[in-house]
Length: 107
Image (tube, rainbow, N blue to C red; front, side, top):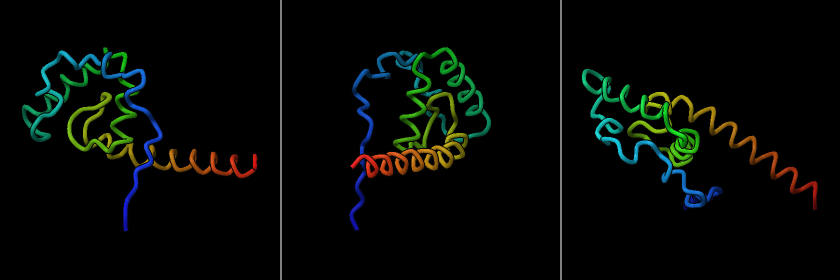
């Protein structure tokens, strides 16, 4: 069975990464090793950078759409994204289903 990813978003158009506050930050904070001890402080530091970032929403959208499992993306930790991704996928499926139904009705 072949898996095909339908890329519905052009990530390079109006590239949010150009505006990302983390571009000049210490990436060690965004990809800590572990989730205890000093890693908690690194995660918190990364989230503080995200709070000041104009690209936080598209960053999170990118992370959810591409299933970024590691690091801090869009102001969320790995665990927070795992929880968000379930509801994000359900909403995405619903949107695609509605679009498909609308297209059928238009024909």
